[in-house]
Every structure is written in C-alpha cells, then in structure tokens.
Amino acid sequence: MGFLELTLIGIGLAMDAFAVSICKGLKTPKLSYSQTLIIALFFGGFQALMPFIGWVLGQRFEKYITSVDHFIAFGLLLFIGGKMAIESFKTDTDSEASGKFDIKELFVLAVATSIDALAVGITFAFLRVQIVLAVTVIGTITFLLSAIGVFLGHKFGAVYKNKAELAGGIILILIGLKILLEHLGVLNF
Image (cartoon, rainbow, N blue to C red):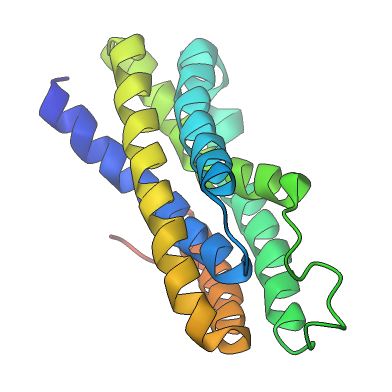
C-alpha cells in the first residue's frame, strides 16, 4: 500500500474526528492555542494508536472486534451528542460545563471517533502494510484536520452559541448512527 492510498485512508478516517473537533470548537467559548493543540493531539494520537492496536491484534481477533465496534462508537457518540444537545437548552449560568475544558469527555470522543481505525489496523495486518508509516500518516492528517475543525467550530460558535451546540450534538448523534448503520449494512458509502 502506497503513500497515496494511506493518505486517502487517513483523510477518510479523520472525517469523524474533524466533525467532532468542530463540535468541540463550538462548545468552547474561550479557546486557547494550547486547548486546540490538546484536542488535535487527542484525536490525532488516538487515530494513530488504534490502527497500531488493530495491527497488533491482527487476524486472530478480527471477528470479535468488528462485530461490536459499531455499537461501541454509536453508544459513545449518542451519549456525548445527547449531552451536548441537552446542554444547548441551558443558559450559560445554568450549565456547569460552559467554558469548561473536559479532558474526560475529550478522551471518550477520541476513542469513539477512532474505533473504525482499529478495524483498519486489523486489515493492515493482512495486507502487510508498513505500520509505522501508516500510523504516522493517519495521525498527522487527523491532527491537522482536527486543529482546523476546532478553529472553524470556535469561530462559528462565537456567533451562534446555543444553536451551534445543539447542531454539534445532533451531528455527533448522526455520526454515531451513520457508523452503526454502515456496519449493519443498511447504508453503503
């Protein structure tokens, strides 16, 4: 598998993280460069780590992982998206999370958006892909797109605030639903 194919896979895998990073930017009223860097590192790091883990697990556990990965991703994104949507109806003084940078939530989102990368890593084991190159490309692309997503979300969210947070929550739920329906064979993209 060549660099071009790895780049395209990296872009494809990064799309969920990009969308979620936009949501994080929407939700963070006072965004700093360090917060943007942390968000991008979480998403890029997990997007690089999961294919490596999948590659290590390889062929032996493929049927177990791929049979439940979509349920895990759907559940995590439904939970976080639902929480965001509910919080969008609260005023700033009502919301505990308003302006709060929650590392635990970021961890859950990073895991949820990188579960597909775990399955890709399993296929890398079968295709004998150079795993160091693959995880470097995937992680770097996700890092860059996530940083851009946070910036774009923050700029948009500063204008629309609660509506943007509601939209972000709905987007997370829809991403989770898309993942679930694709793996169940209902959607074919």
